[in-house]
Length: 77
Image 1 (cartoon, rainbow, N blue to C red):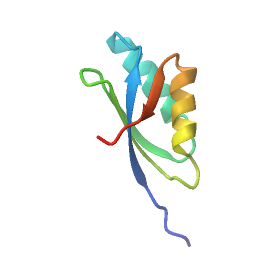
Image 2: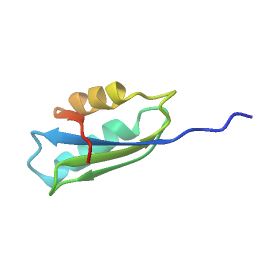
Image 3: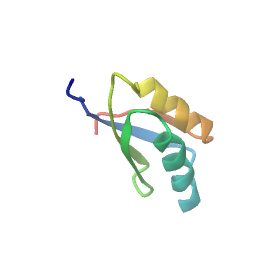
Image 4: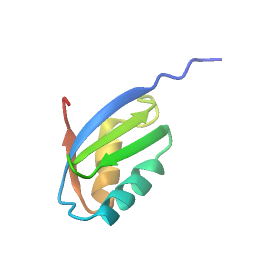
């Protein structure tokens, strides 16, 4: 059995202005295979995702945020 590697990715989000936007983003990203958890921080516009990078890439996560109607980009913090 192979070990599952989980990566923690932080993204900066743009364009969301209400708490319901948080739920939309969490729902879209949470649907991706390999995503273990997703937390959107409304006040700081940060999205934190724990995922298997062999299954779901950062680009996949950015695309899921885009499908929810928002822009996100990788962030160092």
